[in-house]
Length: 282
Image (cartoon, rainbow, N blue to C red; front, side, top):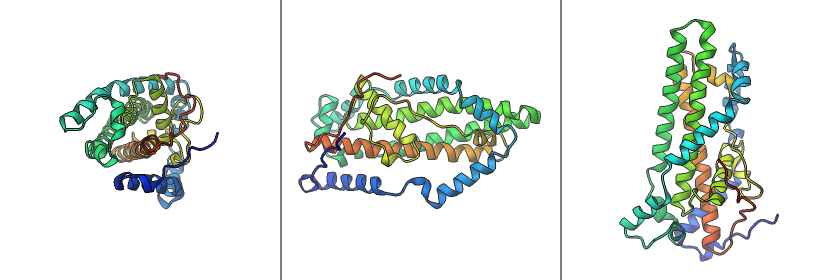
């Protein structure tokens, strides 16, 4: 499939041109895992895998149990995202001449971003709180029980976190989509949003071509070692906060760049390939 033509920055408004340049820098950057932080994280996870029970958690939550938990969380996320009409109403109150979500695509990138300046901070903060609470819960359960039940406590905390993580990431992508004039309640847009979510959860989001194939199922990943570490008193809170905030920040960054890229392609007459993403996804 041929790549869409890139819009000409010379015909863009200054704000749109800056946004396009930022997307291109993101596309060209080295994968996140190739830096020193990625290497340290990999070493830390390798060390945590020495904890007794890590393999059990990988087997349980990495198998058939993960799917239903993820699906429940994603349904909650779609519902919690609200409706695109609410975004339109907010813009109307601010004086913008919009009537339907598609009208947002005639506005400037800077205008749209100004209307949701606190979106990223709110999502990242909520993710940190969520991760800290699940880590604290697992640590408390483990501390109050025998060592043999530590895996069970970590399993319960990890199951809860799987649902909450799926809900938070899904809601985040849906909110970004709506603020660019795309309504994820529509089947084709729901499928595109799922592809964006899957890209944000992938090892190298900037290399993913969203819309180049059929509907996808996001892989939220799972590290039994990290989940077990949540149950270690004094360590679980920190592990939970780091994992949760990094995940949601990465999903938000990916959604921001991919929707900006699509928005500018369509606004300046070089539509990005959306492919066959027309089937509804749960």
